[in-house]
Image (cartoon, rainbow over all chains, first blue to last red):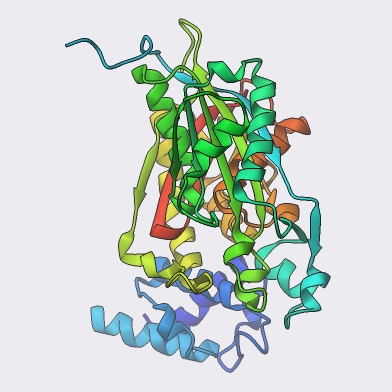
Length: 83
Length: 324
């Protein structure tokens, strides 16, 4: 799974859960400050990401993932570990 | 040995009537914003609540249970003497002794019934309804008064914005009795359980503290594990999700129940959203929502509705009922 594939998948998830168009979900964006996504939506996004990528993002790690790139990196790193 | 049953076993149980009670004091989001750092917009977007009801300072769990129970009893056409068992589901009594159910029964003129309180937190009413159904089917009771009653505000820190915006007070009740001969059961098989490994996520740590909850952990648990439980209850009742007239989950948080409904495949218009003007009243929320919906004509008599309770413990229970 490339970073680009993860980014595209994450964009779909964010669009479905928070109604933010997928093309606005770019690496440097902050979920809270730029995309206006709150903590509960972040949990929903984490759960959907687990279904899609097979990578669990626990709540205590989720709070440190502030940008889109942070999530892409987390998924890429942990998907690699479990592969 | 003679049978221990007091009555002939029934083929099935049903809800005969419902009753609800909400305290008079309406608390708006703006009222709360005046005390803690929050806003109407923030509360609506996070939990979906516009207003809730708070019990008066001297109003007890038993007081609210008596009103809701009295309404259900009046609607049943039965007399107090017909009630053999009273179960009060509650987790917020002022004191644990004496039990609320015995006091409530006495105040309603129900003489010498079996009476016990049941604590399965926000799942309490669905647990109690299952117990009542089993008692009627076994013949240990003929008619049961089941009440969910809570004064959550007694255990909430008014300055804690993570809980004070959500929890509220109220009571709801149902009279349960046997179905007529040849009629199908009106209370379906219960699917229940608990997850004690997560019990620290919603707790009152000691008798001098307030309740707290880890919102994100609870949100994740409820939105990932409850829809299969609800689906299983439908399956065991032999009812397709698409045939449900309503899905009445514990009114925990509008976003949680919308997510569960979405995953279960229940259209938004069939989801009970009593939380918007009632807040989260723990074990009272399911019967209160049911009572209000039937009063307003939102539920068709004889149709199947799915109930789902879930909360601290982390206890959960689901069953399909026939709307009285």
